[in-house]
Image (tube, rainbow, N blue to C red; front, side, top):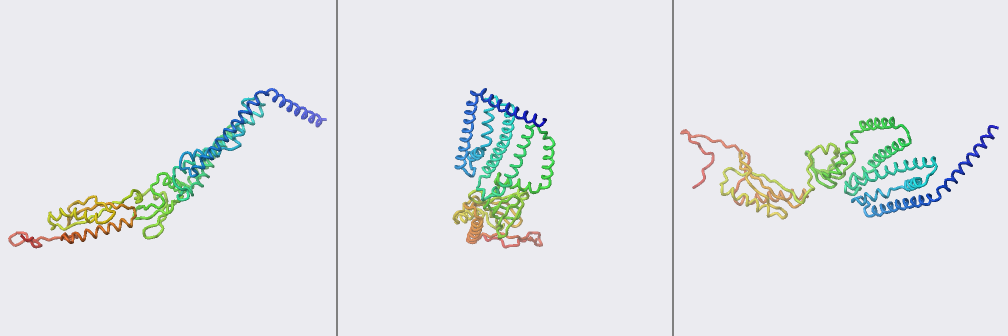
Amino acid sequence: MQIRDNAVEAISSGREGVQSIIDWFRGNALELPVGLAVAAAIVLFMLGLRFSGAWLSSGDPDCRRWRGVIGRVLQKTSIFFMVVAALDMVANYAAVPVKIEHLLDILFTIGFAFQGAIWARELILGVITRRAGEDPTETAIGNALAVIRVLVSVTLFALAIIVILDNLGVNVTALVAGLGIGGIAIGLAAQGIFSDLFAALSILFDKPFRRGDVIQFDQTTGTIERIGLKTTRLRSLNGELVVMANTKLLEREIHNYAGGRSRRSQLPFGVVYQTRPDELEKISSLAKGAVESRKGCTFVRCAIRGFGASSIDFELIFDTRSTDQNKVAADRTAVALAILRSFSEHDIEFAYPTQVTFTAAPDGTMVMPYPAPAG
């Protein structure tokens, strides 16, 4: 008898549920078409945004400009989010049953949380790609993007799940505390890896150097071949491969020879103190002629730098219209040889480290260590 009564009660409750749904349709006969029209308009509008995002992304697939970033975000709008947003809008126009309204609210919360995480992920990755400003296949961004995508996705979707659970009434305090402790533990265990990763991102954003640039740090000079997640690889002038951790590299003073269109060279030299003042006055013009005799070189100045222990010191400065280190070295050599020839023709002697000893005669007068000039 008990089973029979339960069956009768279930059938009657089912009939009441069906009747309540029929009554709801009858009671909202006017509001339902309006709600469905609004829902269809919302879906069409979001589909239009999605197609617009695809069009924007097709014109800028590498996210070099903001149109590519925005298109990338809009293109990731999901159909599930469109549907639940439309259904939730219908629920606002029609007085739906409480259980259905609660179900729609849950679905909308889930859809909005995950859709927001997707939008935020694509926006962050798009901004990073745009800020890097280069072909991802030629820099570390191509290698880092996969790792960055995983880190950003895990972080954003974890926040989305926490938001969903919190809206469902679940106490997330313990979960947040556990995630915080786990994050601290992982950060301490992999702090070296993360420091090099962030150093690689700093190189990509600040651009102190790029692939193909010739840089110098400490006593090492080489050409950048690859900027990795942890290390940067350089090909030195001797041909060997130099591998340097990104963090250690950024801690050093870096000279980048790739910037600009010319290179400035300094060529110090000294002449003997016995050089006459009129000959000293010729040195600047002779050095200028030596520089201008070399094609692609521009004279800057040649002046006395000071009086040394055994020489009158000069400094020649000139520019080479090239960033090629081999060209710069060849120009320095050519200018130095031209100065040697010119000074030899004008009997101007270069100085070398010497020490002159003066002696005194029996009457106390100084005896010159070299013959006095004639006349």
